[in-house]
Image (cartoon, rainbow, N blue to C red; front, side, top):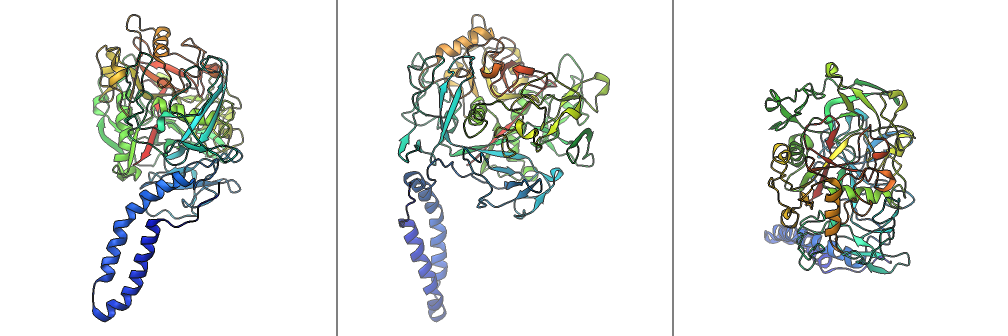
Length: 580
């Protein structure tokens, strides 16, 4: 589409005000009036209006053009970074740098930022600065608003195909290959058959307003299911997702020009803690985390939670319960002194199933791996601070040459995320993508079944608030931060709970979360690529995604499993950010 080159009303007003300012310079010297102050105030008053109009015009006039993704939204503390392939280093750039991102099927270059918890701070970072690996801040990747179409394999274990179109602004519009404007649907075709695909593109629900009038989500029985697909409370142009699972501060392994060693390289770093203490612990064993904190019944309430970092080559942040993961995820935006974000401008939260689905669907589309699984992170090592228990821990951002395999403790067989083999562990098969979607460590999401299991109250904390047995909770109690799922109250097995969710499926409910659409049922390796499909059940009411290092074929982009929500050594989490 040709870009509109006309002038808007706001642009005309700003032009007139500028002329007033220029004229006022002379007049002010002559008559001593305050025309300059008046005009300056007028400019300030129009700034927000101009921005709002520009956003609307971008949607209406297709400024982004055919097949263009929404540009990333930035907030305080976010530092745009690009990768210099020639010098093998990250470089700070500006938001206008043409090399920052390019969401095309050829380049597949997704936008990256780092936060201010590394050497560089958002307000002082200088474009062109090369960033050493040890100086990186927590890394996040932009997921632009899109609509998707499952072309084949719907509702089966047979690996299918996913096609994606990017949407303009916060609209449902996209432009087809002929340059014609089309409108994506907000409901899936009701007559879609198992093994088949969708006729139309459907707006991924993670970008939708769950409160939008006229777009109520209803289950197969006609019940309104508010936020049932993991929507937000406004239409979103995109969101940021952590590039790696959560890691522990002061626990980066040694990397000598690509030769990896499990010895920690940053032992002199100062650890920064939250004001919150651990609220749950591992019942059957006494373990220490990578910082040496003992998360036991006798000691857990004495230990403060350390802030997570989302960086490569870190000991993963494990031994933490679901409720504590929620608290720390919210504090990423609130801990301005550490991450540099402003909570009034950025929301941070524990990743939802819908956000996991949005990431892996884009990763599996023509803008990512184009139907291929990412390489697996299958490395684990005996904890350096907990040798007596022989506890094994995971490392973020290292990969084997293959998409599956048994767990290994041989680090010489592993490859850093920036190497030729390591790049295959990315959602894009290049360094700009999201990593560790296949293996490394199970990742909890903000989702559960309200079956009244004791673990919900014990491990869930303030996020997982429905602690009684309530099979109707999925209708009324989901929020923009958490999704409650249907279950079978009579048996509560993973097979019957999956069937209960499937029976509630409708043309507007039960999509986007990479559960029903890409699996034949809850029976071991029944998701695409033979990934796990174990729905939440009796004493495992929480949800896990992605798989861990020892899950072989069961780990992968579409892996799902029930969980106790307790402080396991092979469970962690990931954070999503929304600019507001």
